[in-house]
Each structure stands twice: as C-alpha cells, then as structure tokens.
Image (cartoon, rainbow, N blue to C red):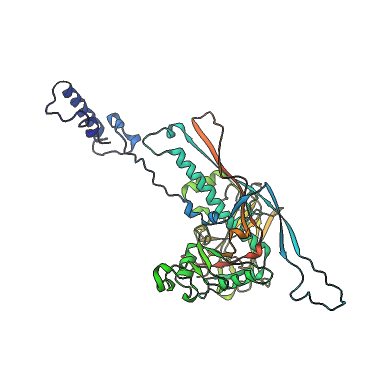
Amino acid sequence: MDLDEGFYGGSFGELDDYGGIAGAMESHRQALLKATTALQGGTTYVTDPPSLTGGGALRMQSIEPILQRTIPTDEHFPFYNRIAQSDANPVDEYTVYDDIGGFLGGSFQGEIDDIVETEGNYERKVLRVKIMATMRQISLFLENQKSFIEVQGNEALGAISVLKRDCNYNMYYGDETVVPNEFNGLEKAILDKNDPELIIDAGGEGLDSGGGEILSLSRAIHDDGRFGLATDLWCSPLVQLHEFDRKLDPSIRVSLNSIGPAGIMLGTPVPGVRAGRGPVKNNEDIFIKEGQAPWEGASAKLQARVVALALTPATIASTVAATGTAANKFQAKHAGLYYWGVEATSRKGNAPTAVSAQVAVAAGQKVTFTITNPADANVTGYIIHRSRKNGANAKSDLRKMVRIPRTAGATTVYVDENQNVPGTSTVFVGDFRPSDTGINLRRMGTMRRFALYPTNKLMRPWAHFFFAGLRVSKPLHFGMVRNVLPGGALWKPFN
C-alpha cells in the first residue's frame, strides 16, 4: 500500500494549502509518514517486522497475496491417472487363471488311446486395501489473515498432492513385506512371478540403441502362454532423454508427425517404440528414480522430522565369501572397494544410516551382511545402499540398492551378489489397456476429507484419506528392464 496515495489524493482530492480541517489532516499524515518510514537504529533501514519499534511497527507490510507454489500438479502423477480404477472391498479376493493346461500340440491322440487329462492353473489371490492418510491443521489466526493466501484451500491442495504422490510411487515400488502398511507395487508383482523372459537385467549399463530390450519384452508378453499386448512403457525422465530421445535407432521410433520426417531423427522426442504388434507408447515419470541417496542429504525439515521420529538405527557387519553362487554378477569390471549403508525403515520414516567398513570385492565374490535388528518394533524393514566403486566413506556417496524385510530374531542377513545395482532405475513394459483389467487400482470410495476434533488450541485440524490397493491380476502381461543406467546420470556405480 502506498501511504501517500492511501491517506491523500484519494476521495479528498488535491489541496492547495493546509488550512482548517484539511491542514490538520495533512499535519497528522506527515507525522505518521515520518514515523513509519524513518530509519530504525539510526543508520540501517530494517525490514524484518519483529525488529521494528515505535511508529515503524505500524508500517503496512508488503506481503504478496499470491503464493509461489513449488508443488506437484496433476500432470506429475501420470501412472496414477492412467491406471483404471474400480471399487473394492477391504479384503479383495480374486482368482488368477494363467495357464490353460497341457503342452503345445499335446491334444493329438490315436483312435482308441486314453484321453490325456489336462488342467488349467488357478491361483486364489487376496488384495488387502491399504489406508493412506495425511493430517493438516492451521491456526484460526492464519486462516483469517486478509493480506495472505487462502491457507486452508492451499493446505488441502497440498494434502491431496501428498496422497497422489505416495500412491503413484507405491504403484511402482510398494512392498508390504518391508512396510506392512503399503500395498504391493508392479515391481514386486513381476519379481514374485519371476518369469525369466519378463525380467531383463541391464547390469548397470544403458539400453540397447536398437531397442532390443523393449522389443524382447513386447514379444514375450504376446507369446504363447501369456497372450498379452505391450501397449506402454514407463521410465525415468533421464532414461527417456538419453536412452530413447538421443540414442534409439530411428528405424524403430514412432514419428513425431507434427514435424514431418525429422521426427525420427536422433535427438527428437520418442513418443513410442515400434514393435511387432504395434507401437509401445513411451511414458516418463519423475517418481521412477535412479537410486535415492540416504535422507541425511535431504532438506533440513525432513532431517528434523527423522530426528524427531527417533527410530533406533541398525548396525551392520560384513564378510566376503571366496565365491558367490551361480547367480553372482560381480564381474572383473566391478571389482573394487565399496561401502554399504543400511537405513532401518518403518511406515513413518527411516532411521539414521549405519555405514559398513570398507570391503574389497573381487570378481565372482559375494558380500554377506548381518544386520542387528533394533529392539524398536516399529522397524519393519531395511533400505540397503551401496557406494560407487572406490567411492568415498560418505553418506552422500551412497545410493539406494534394494529394500528388504526385517526377519524374526536378532539379525537380518542380506547377501549382495550385484543383482541390484545402486544408482539405476527400471523400465516397466506391459499391457495397460483399461479394458484388459490386468492392472487396476482398487479403491474404497474416492479421496475424501475428514474433520478432526479440535483441541484446546485455536487450531482447525482435518485429514485427507484414501483407501486403495494395486491389483496386478495378469502378471504375465508385464515385464521390466532392471538396473538401467541412463547416459546422463551424474552418479555412476562403477566409474
């Protein structure tokens, strides 16, 4: 507010002299103007409101009424928006029929031969719908400020974004064996099915420039015994940019029709990959991550929350075996010195990271970790991190490798044979047609708001909640490329 304009020059109009009532008003105006614009402390102009004294404390504040938001909007939740949603019960029972029985060509027989008995494969499944909720509260004083934003509406928008963000992320990576309050995500459904043709390991490298992995998964999903159709792939923004846009062979790119033949040149965006049964649409999602660092490198507010949670950290001891198993993937190019970190995790958050001693790993070896389970019953699992090869003994040099459940007893054992590469991401491929019902977000009602009881404070509390679970009822219609390191990644596990 401009004081000169607010107190003068408005409805009173211009005055040529300061006589009479007009003169007295002008005299008061000048005194107030002097008091509210005078230097505080003699030589320094103070702008911090709590430090103002005297007339300066009466000065109008220039708080902008438009909040500059840095929050996700609906476009940032593509997986949540794309997956078909349907109503569910608290315990959602269904049956998977994924094998018609017999073997290929096995129904032929002689004129009087016994008829060969065959039977399809049925699996009874149970989906437990999980509760997602976030609490918000604002003071009545803040709610009634007229010079600021409409706070309650903004907090409601933030709460909805939290639920959508967590649901979107969990639909990829949720694992109820690690955190029982989560629902299982697509990655776990694929790993549990463990079909070798539907799980391709990039081994900490980039994708084939000829799209080999995507074409192989598309063929496998459509193959005999699976009978699916690969319609979409989901990847991180870095994988989209460096492994598809800048690298994919133009011959298998879906063209950007709006810019003509140039739409299939290297460097142009790739909206889809040409496969035998039709194009596989590319979708990038910011919630597909290239391995997150421990929380210690996060914002001060998140760090304060973790400290307040006071989860007991785990302790970690390691040993190196002479040789790994047949599944071992520590090759000569991976040999070097490593550190590992372990975060105890719960539904509320994670404990401080415990870091191992440095371990020298040679080709073909495996590293066995013994984690001492904390007495804290809230800890239900662990996040295992690993440093880059010959990296520093610093938490900032660790990246997420895998999440594992806590086992009963005094310890939890994890064996690292380089099957999970830190600092990499996953590309998911599958049949995402809503009409196919192979993947479905089952929910009880819509996302809703619930008023909470007020306390003895002038606060208005409420909660936003959502009951949901991801049902992957046709797991053979989905595959993935694991351990993908995009070309533009700044943190590289083996360099």
